[in-house]
Image (cartoon, rainbow, N blue to C red; front, side, top):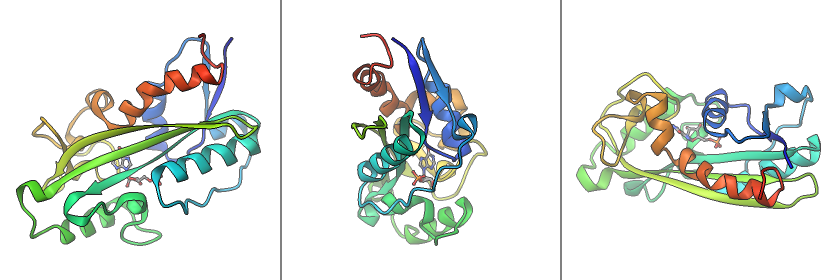
Length: 203
Ligand code: IMP
């Protein structure tokens, strides 16, 4: 059996990373543009990545009639007790851009050194069918926050985040390098097993 999987995101960077990793025989990956429907925006008001990812996947699956995959992700900084967390996209304000979010983070941790700059990227991926069955998986990438932004690749907090075992930020790694070790890549490795449960890939 094979089928279609709709990506419930309008974030171009996420879409690109998801499409680069999600390559399963017999599974066609669709974007919201592909299905040509104007779906209502989902308000991300959950208190956890899992709650937000499940809500996005469930509502988009119900509105589109397709099996949907949604990602909710963000950065958790140890010295800030897990902030920005679920507020990563809007850390410096509702309409803040990546530079403003990064600048706020750097200001907040300017007096922290060494171990205190430990951080992790977290990604929860939810898959839902139109009947409301939802399953989630989680991926974590540990690392630390650099004292200044470096690199031009990726998005979000990539210029500030140095993954464990590396001396370059995510934004200094190539797409291929990031896609092997990232939180999103780790969660996506588990997605294959979820797709089996939704009968999208062969058992
Ligand atoms: P979401 O759309 O609510 O999941 O927002 C995720 C936010 O977390 C993004 O806007 C980024 O600020 C941050 N984020 C998530 N994944 C990454 C990543 O791979 N690199 C850099 N920032 C990320």
